[in-house]
Amino acid sequence: MKNHQHSNSDSVYTCSMHPEVRGKEGDKCPKCGMDLVPISDENSVKIDVKLLTDPQTIKAGTAAKLIFAFQENNKNIPLDISHEMKVHLMVVDENLSWFRHIHPKEQADGSYSIMETFPDSGKYLLFSDFKPHGAAPLVDKKEIIVSGSGGNDKMDFSTKFVSLVDGYTVTLENGDDLKTNRSQPLEISVVKDGKKLTENDIEPYLAATAHIAMISKEEKEFLHIHPVSDKRFPIYAETHIKKAGIYRIWVEFQTNGKIHTADFTVHTKAGETTKNANGHHDHHAH
Image 1 (cartoon, rainbow, N blue to C red):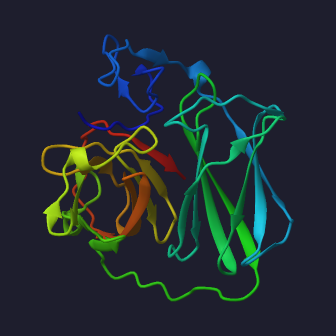
Image 2 (image 1 turned 90 degrees about the vertical axis):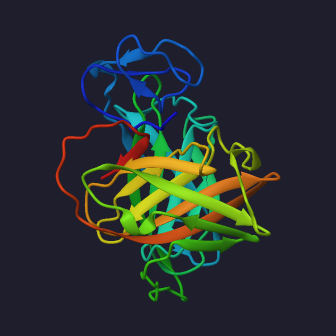
């Protein structure tokens, strides 16, 4: 089983229970067996995402409330649950050295809010991944400025394919072979105490084997990938990178009830232009 990419093309079918699954008419969901249903043009809605902060001026090291409103015609709209949450919020600093994956909670007025403390001053990017009711999933990008001292401008963007976290050695095995214009795997091994973990050693996290966020250094293009396991790697995904350049990658996985976050830095090379349209599950923010 492979992951799938969200698409806005015509005649795309999806699973009502697993919106990341894509296929064609007559297909069944590989996860639950339900018939896939069409995503019509009527479901391609234009949503206005508004962000308010309390206080309005956020200071580094001080907790602030982030309030999101997902609106159509100036009215809050209902959202569907996707991977156990209605809103997945990925937050990074401009230098891509700090990362958070958090989940704002729904409020009585239909907005979503969460408290967060930003460690340093500077610009932060907020990517909200959400699914309007009955429509295809969307990703919105917002920017905020955090005042105060302690800004981080010394991020090392040299390649990094091995991440040590909580006693685990997490390796992006094919990190040096990523190219644009092709469907390609992300092959991630996990080792602890000299033992290679298998898919049975990884616990489901938010209805997926793991969660992968991938952000480009220059244009801050964002991909949210839900990987699967295979016989070789406990964390395996497929992705399609459109532009060459430096990318930061964060991989979240769960063992013994604890979330671990590994990070990588890859330099993606330009590949040959192809018409390969193999599906995979990425969300893109432009």
